[in-house]
Length: 373
Image (cartoon, rainbow, N blue to C red):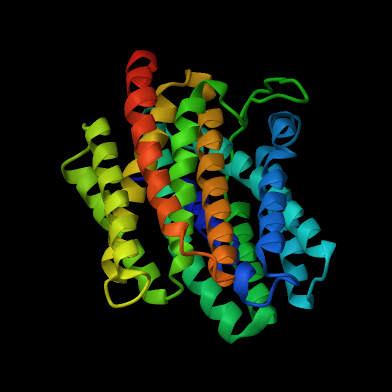
């Protein structure tokens, strides 16, 4: 059984990720952006991704200098403040400033919780399993965020949208406040360091991970129906079930199967052209492929790191996941919104093909030589 504090952290992360992922469908075409074209959405995404990176080199020092839970709570309260600004309406450069701040506080939260507290509160022998549980629920939070964001922003307007987003963050604060964190001796790291932020050795894994998430985000932007998001969750569940029952010890085989599912989703989406009832099979294939590939890249990250680098590896994985999804979803939304998305299917298929080939040629043999556990 998992420790009760682990469950609290898990629920807090689900609430935070759902709140942030609500902005996926809301920003491009639901009235939250003063300029919903390619430039406006693109700059907004760049600001969010830059915000994730700006405070990250200092987080390791803050987590040692101050209480770990306090850093996470301050990041969460910062998210509450900047997210509540969407309810009053934003214009011009205010949008980009708010997105930059959202990215910064979100990055701090994930480093403090997903790369620090999660490890500190997990049994040493179950830390890999804890990371898998944590990030599997992050994938399901993506489905919840997409569904809630589309419904609230389109049918109820920005005020209720911001209210629900802030409410989820406050719920996360309640659960995080209740977590009991044991004392840890200070480590005295440098005030600016890549520790808990970026694992240079994992760059070969980061490239295909980010590429897969980029193409997946572009596919999600094509379909704006709650049914599609629900079948995406079904695909995630199928991938999780097959992993636990048949593919647990077949890392490379599961990645290969994932790329086959992703290619199948891209081909079927192109044949259907986003119309008809076949979108459910596209969603299930996309969910299966994304679940297979990204979960195995997380394990690959963990297996190439030293014992003290596990938190750094998990943050690097999160950067590839979030940056790829945000860039893909926003870019494709802008293209399809302007009627220029006809060639996007070829871009999606090309990305899946190139990342799959890159994995087979450059990542698989390198991983076999460098894995440590």
